[in-house]
Image 1 (spheres, rainbow, N blue to C red):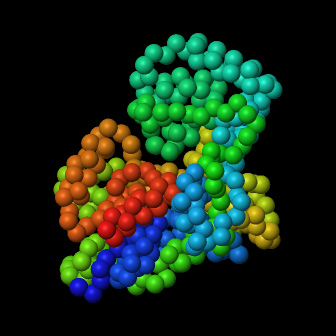
Image 2: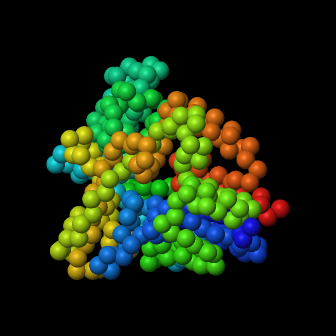
Image 3: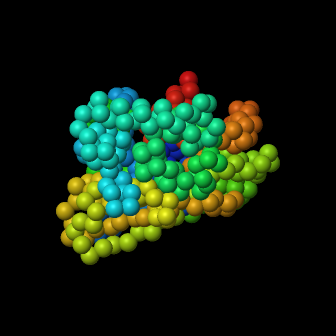
Length: 366
């Protein structure tokens, strides 16, 4: 046994766990099937701009312990996520707030906005919502739903809102203040110089092998480590023996433009079903860039099939039931720790991934 831990995947969970165990004097080998570290938070410099290659990642948390932790490895800027939404020729602020309602209805006060929304909800007379559409209509009324929820959600999930379960949208926050800050969390920002630099700091004292498939590596090196930390797909670990879990995939179209400022905001959502992409990211605005060029990425949600890169789980009752069966298998593994979004089949925000990695490392250190 050359290592204490073989860590599969160099994303946040694997990197944080590796850092913590290395501090305790353990020897860690990190392998990743990609040609770079960082998993889906990988950033790459293009024209002096840090490009979020696998979609926008804005760090936010209300947990001061987690905020203080990440600030040990990177300096964060004061970026505030304030996306806008385009519906046909109309432009709205997100999240749904008084700026949104004022633009939509030509009103000014919270009282007016609440009355319009409540009147729309009451006119629909929806009892127990039977699907996502009814759930959303009961929460926000017809105007907000039709313009800002319906098309975007259908693109995201690849099916009509009437075909989606109601529990996918448990709540749609309505803010009756003029505040465009998307997150309610106390701490928010982007690491200056990109996420790849942050990951590099976490794992700088570990051995790393890239372009390395775990399943092939395991065959050739069965005894290389005492324990394995696995952050890949949960069902793939068990060779899909109970069935295949569903995911959604995302296709990115990234281009460099010979202009300084393309859309004036880092994140612009396109909420019409007819527009094939869900949003355009203009990466320089995450770091208040002044470069003479700009880089944009269009994001297209696509159907996932086995062998594709998974991005987020499909949260329905069938998948959760299957995931629970796989988690039961995982719980019986004595020498394997499962973590991250894929390894647990949970949609975690970044701060929760770090929190669970720290908990796993603490448990190992006892």
